[in-house]
Image (cartoon, rainbow, N blue to C red; front, side, top):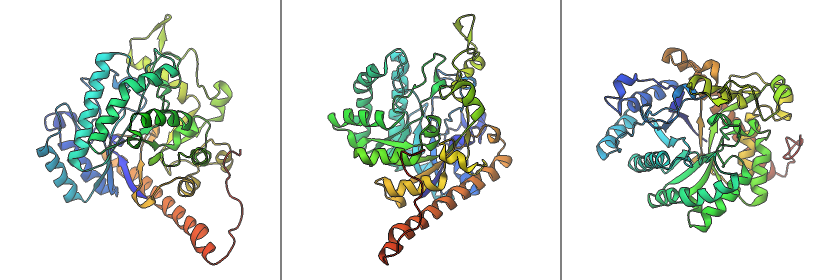
Length: 403
């Protein structure tokens, strides 16, 4: 598969005082950094500028990056400059990414987020990529069923704009439990295959089914007690094995002690995000809402975690080799056209010192490349080479729906 890396891995590669004054400098320097660490492509991160964002960075578990600065619309001149940098570094572009709540309850705030998404769409066209990755989100004031109605009313028009530009919108399935200091856990309604299918059927009714696809991230499946092989098998059984067209490569390591204390719903009370019976106004205290997730798990940068084999069977970490094998066996993908995007959110290694982070990212990229190549070789042997000679494949392997 084709390797890429999300530029949010290094938030301030270019200091803000330099890139705020020269918005495309950050993209140029990230392309050069990608070349140095061996990333053949980047997933270019966009976000509301910190002066415009409704969520303070201090309240976020994994701050998003506006490497692509779209305070002003992207222009042909800006695109030409970025293309020159891509040509000189020989680093390509897998897609653009803007991860935000597209179903925000406040209408004016939602309008601002949608306007930025439209700018991301325009930038994608100018830079020659055919996909944008993001969230659907949720209006937390509404039930999940009511959010389906809202999706039809306010998100379908965004997909029609993507369609007009020849783009696909790939949804990452993180449930975003800490996105709100309320007690809701699913704050991105596109969190699992059941919801994906329900949303896709709405899209089909409006003629934009081809615009709605999934940017699958196995860390979120682990977070919800799922395993990739079963997720992929379910999609195939349901006839929706075409939905996944891109991957984030990020793991999750479940802490059995945390599960024993709180279960998979995470910390439900006394988190510290409320004070005196009222929501805390302090962003640092609002960040405690993420204990709904962090008390029982921690993100993994591929290759950094030691795994007990039993954890694979209990769906408590990502079995990377079987993940890549299952994708080939069960999904309707063309591996040579499919991107694996390394997303770095392992907290202890999320250093923002370029000299320290570079060897970490370089090694993780090498691990991801090697695992995928091994899976490709296994698939070829088991599904092409041996069958062509009438030789049986050994063993049983991991099976879907079994734990």
